[in-house]
Length: 173
Image (cartoon, rainbow, N blue to C red; front, side, top):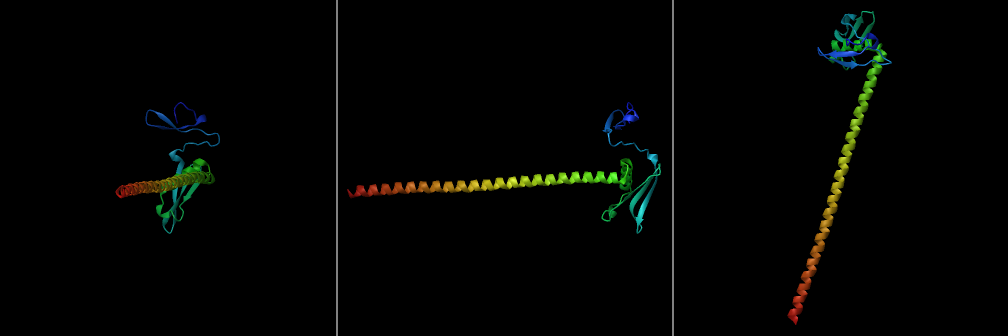
C-alpha cells in the first residue's frame, strides 16, 4: 500500500523501489484485501488414479478453497494455477463470485471474438463487392471499347468504299 494512504481507502500499488503506481482503486460494491503469504496454511493435491487433478488450499481463517481440472484439462494440470484459482476464490469471497467473474470475462471475450469475426466478414464482403464492381466496370469498358473500335472500322470501311467509288467514277469518265 502507498505510504500516504490509510486502510480505510485501500488502494493496491506496485512499486519499482522509488515510485508507486496504482493497480486497483477501491470500489463501492467490492472491497479487496491483501493476503499475507502466511495466510495459506496448507496445500493439498486431489488425486485420481495417482494423477493430480486439483488443489485444495487452506487459509489461516480455516476457509478452504478447491480447484479441480476438467477431464480435458487434466494433462495440463498445474499446482500454481490451482493455487491461483483458490486465491481468486478467496479474494472474491466465494466460488460463485469467482465463477460469475470468469463467465462474464468469457462472455466478453466471446463477444469481442464474434465482433472481430463479423468485422472481418464485412471487410471480406466489401472486398468481394469491390472486386465484382471492378470486374463489371472492366467488362463494360471492354464492351464500350469494342463498340468504339467497330464504329471506327465502319467509318474506315465507308471511307474506303467512297474512295473506291470515286476512283471508279473517275476512271469511267
